[in-house]
Image (cartoon, rainbow, N blue to C red; front, side, top):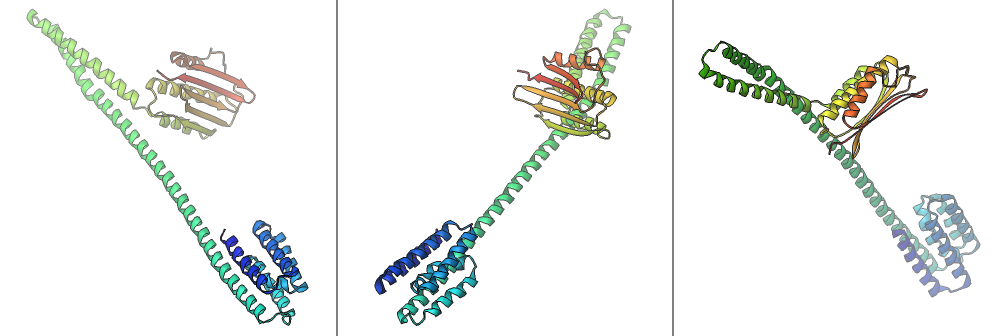
Length: 357
């Protein structure tokens, strides 16, 4: 837009000079030709060859008639902007050819307009360069900020996962402590109360010992349930699946996609672990392929498990095999769907388990 305003100013200066000095057909033709070349250079800015041909054509016209030299500053603007400095030489020669034709006012006008053209072109080029540089810097900083944001998000996710793993380890530790210490102490106390009930002959104390025994048994049941719940909640599905993948990575090329939330119910976690382990063992035993794809994906209403290899698997898929029968039992127990397909392209285990509502 700044270039267009510069050209409008130059056009007005040339127009006013032509009106004041010589309003002839050739002055109008020269001004129109200069305007056409200038607008074409603006419009076909990316087509440098076409612009170059038009500018050379105008310089040729400068040798044909001197009035084209007086309108030349409008074309000179685009020549300077396109860094075609060598085109200025023939333009200057055309002026020298008609130097006897020009009077002092024409010469002063040419000198003035050329100086104005050079000053406006340099100022506009500097402004455009500064704006482009500013946009480039802004885009670079935006890119850096985006990368930093992604890195921060990644670090945040990694930190959250580390906290999650630490929480699971702590639950495991608490469950182990409860089992090894409190559980054993309660077991020993229950045995001691049982021994007291056997050797005690006092009928008045039997009822008290019975109540103590029932309380201890109830406490033991609660401890066992708590230990079981803590152990179930401390299972990290992603870590378990990655360990399975690592165990078969020496033989197979593994492609995995694990996309699920950490709050998956424990019964579904154990089912997926059991089915995935059975499917991978099945591939190790029977598959003749060299690659395995393992995917566990959480959808809005269900979980998907896919284990697929690229070999011809000779295992039975009728359900008579113990491993496949176990997979079917696990899936049926959760109200899910199990599909096993075998073809020349490979062996595929597909499981869909609905979310608990």
